[in-house]
Length: 254
Length: 278
Image (cartoon, rainbow over all chains, first blue to last red; front, side, top):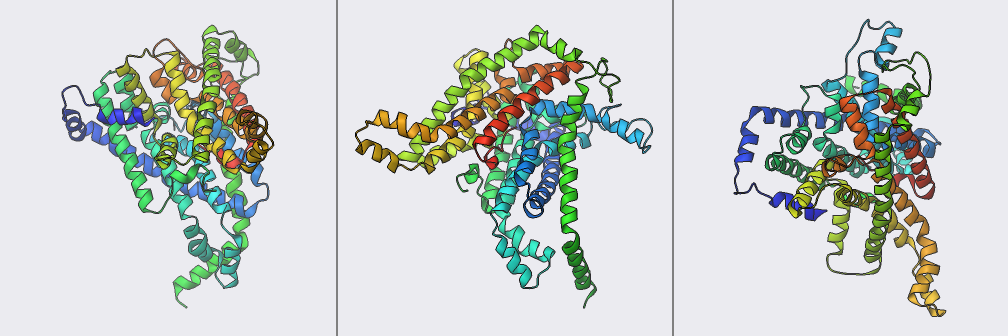
């Protein structure tokens, strides 16, 4: 794998030049795209983080049917990505499920027309990455010793204080891992914004895809990929400094 | 008592009383969020009309029939199955050898090897896809069936390794020593002692590899060339160019296959391990 990747970093446009980078960082279209990508990535990560944590916490603390619930979280996740995005097209499009339900309840007349918008992309991304975040948080929450929480409550702390003083700090590792696992793929994604986003919602992944499949401007596509890779490295270094251990995620540390 | 601390006390009391209710509420709402799209697509696949509006006016199986008699769709499914049939054993063999090396031997660069195996999990797929496209481009390898196989193997390898490695790590090596002390040679020991013990992990790894290959889109999209089409890339082009409810029917087929594979894999391994994929 890394053979391929290192390759990419070394592959300069035939005579070595920085022109591609110059174009990238001076053209306002590309700067806008990068900015939009950053915004969508941060929004998705924040929403998936909160929802995923609350869901994992609820599953660990309030239910006994942990296995069944986890299965229900994982199954959608393993359904084909494109199929899931297509399902959201069906729901969000004009006359789709959302419109029908809202009209039935007399909340709106006509269409809310959510498809092909910034919000649609967010809904789609959160849908895809919520299970991943939940499972990651679940793993660290279920490793938390419940006696610690009892001890905290015995000592007079309420549930909120206990959460911020005990639970959250003790699962910070999982939180960092969850952030990394959501942030990195969203930053490089092109399927979701292509399918759910409109002409105004362009992400860097879509530009890369176009460079390779339509414009055949490989060097510029490679330049963009290097930018994406650089962001990945930044996120990883950031998470490392933040104390997360992403590399150990795959189960070795269990 | 300041205002802030009395407010905090009220919030604490509220949390104490209602946390469980709120928790159940969150679980219910998010489960609806996760499952409504899937149920919608399943329901829409039975429509008899050709429009994609919801709810379907009447029910029929005609889009399943259309899908099952569409030669392009069937070719795509067939290609996907052939790719999977090669990727799965290939991935399992490499993953088992890697796990074996990591488990049994101390060598220089072992940590680096472990890192390299896990790294593709967190590199955006588009970067992998492009790196491979350039790699094959510069080596002058024609895009097509075999580049897809290579791409899928690369994608599946980390997952398979992460499933197979723990199985080997927890296997008690003394069993092998006992077998050899009793006169079996290394090969006999592997077949009759080691393999039966790590078989489940390997099988789960194989299921994982096949599932990934079956669903893989982004990397395939970049390395497939113009002639080959897999099931996911076929659905993609259908959605991009002319959407009919046939796509819904095909999606349900996807859903069922993925569900069956995952349930099988889950029954063999821990739920938490089966987490990552785009």
